[in-house]
Length: 362
Image (cartoon, rainbow, N blue to C red; front, side, top):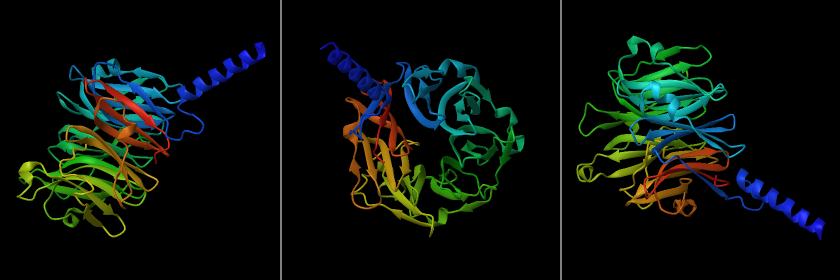
């Protein structure tokens, strides 16, 4: 009997270890929810590297929020106090390359770009190395990487598209584009960076899309956009195609906030407006609300004041994943693919925020 009790106790400990690590045999769709600190008002972006997920957003006191989740042991560490000296009001985007995380956003004095070393928890501002010829930036909205360089996009006196080379410290390359526009999102597709945003010289604003090579040459794709395409925002790449959230500027619907989803095929430069029966025109998608992997997209946001989470592969109807969200979720604020697993962040009805892992959804 004593041996049986010891065996049962051992099996219980093993089962708890599996649960805490997010690995339950026979349950490929296991979910694990991590509550964010109570003073986090939003989680805007995530990046993964060295078995760490870096989460970024905003605190209740309108300063930047940053924290790291350790995938190995399930622990979360709030690092927000360590970036107060950088004067972030909002951390909008993060990425990982060459063992360092890079974070971007805005503060009272404009755009901010910095690095984070997870080995010593050191943050380093890099703004002072951006060349004066690049112009003045009010915000950085998006950063992405091809594995060697970091593309930075945002808003400023000139189109703020900067390539940063981490292997040559403090080396920024200001890129030439044909006209000034605001960059909302950037995404690497294995060959080039896809860039989108809007041209504020028009009212309502015209959508802008382009391809940017690693060497910095820009190909304007805006003329390929469907008629009446306005501001372009969130974008994801599933290995073959892009999915892009956009506003529609048709005179009959623009004042009512009509949104649409576009697909883009890089092989023939074809943009296609997807049916409103698949994606409602009132759907609101945050800047990091689309991710892709293994032929699938996952889209997160808000629809009719309810949380929205689906996966989609450009055929058939979107598949509802909202049942995986915690009770009382009101909004999905960012999504990220990690192999076959889905990482997401959101907001509860009481205003608190969370980070969640859904295994085996991609």
